[in-house]
Length: 427
Image 1 (cartoon, rainbow, N blue to C red):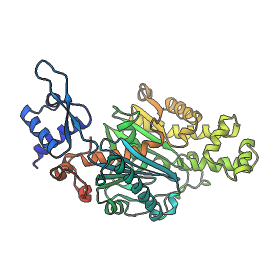
Image 2: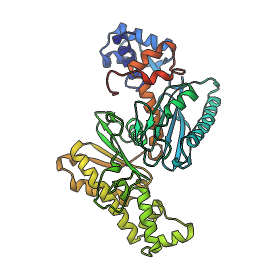
Image 3: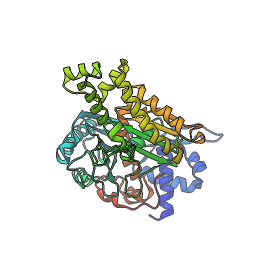
Image 4: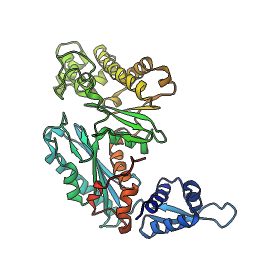
């Protein structure tokens, strides 16, 4: 297909997919395309199974136009979010609606073969369930998206020296899954997929400039600028967990450096400091937890703080202020309209979030915080899974890739689509 043809085809499809336009006249008004071109493109998309006719729409004086619908159930997307201590796998339709999902505890340090084998087992079970419910044993996987808890070279889909993922450095995650499911696969840092999930289906819908900050075992940020996810030149933009926040050389981060934010305010750091407080007798609440369970977690620390434990309150407040200090710099530098806080530690209570908010509003430029909202994630644990699906969906429907598969009606069986170069960033 020539450029103008596929651009207009993608425009028509995007307007209907996003439900921005429901009828041919609406498509014409919003796209600027002529009536004949709109009719031709709608016919093409209907013939290849991407659009279908719906009921009659409202009349503006003449014959009522027929509404158009995107066939979101024409295929499915596999999505997986791998965290430091858990994995989530899901199957969505082509509009990002989750059809089936499963999550369970695991340890990313088990290595890529063991972890990905389990991801594949879960995905196969979910696919069988979705196909059975749809009554279509041949329902095709159109693409897959995966989020990993470490730096990922987006162009190759390979982790790059991930601090908490021993054995994963350079592992061909994308190639493995593409071969298994014979479909195009995209792999990114899990915080980027979380940001994308909030942008497409969460509290950031309609926003163009935002920061998503995950506070879990580690700390990371996803940056959306002008409505586009910003990955940086190699894919590691937003890795704020390893920004230096202290000169203390006694606390060594898992990345090997000292003074990292994650080493003082991440979930693993809070658990470490809570365990020390329990062993030293500075917190009776945590000492009781240690005696009954043999360990102390960040969730235990949050429960202790909610019960009024002074040491736990101090630890969570300090963590919130350290995170807030760094975010204040980013807010003044980048001037987002929205900061979303997610992750297991962030969801454990209000104390840490309150400390983050207070510090950001106090330390940032007044103009930068005039209309700034700092809020908790609405998608919570599902943000990364939903975002991984939307990552694949967005990539599949770019004009350059659409041109390669629309004639056949489906991108299934074309894993090489990930190599197709794009003319411009995704919008």
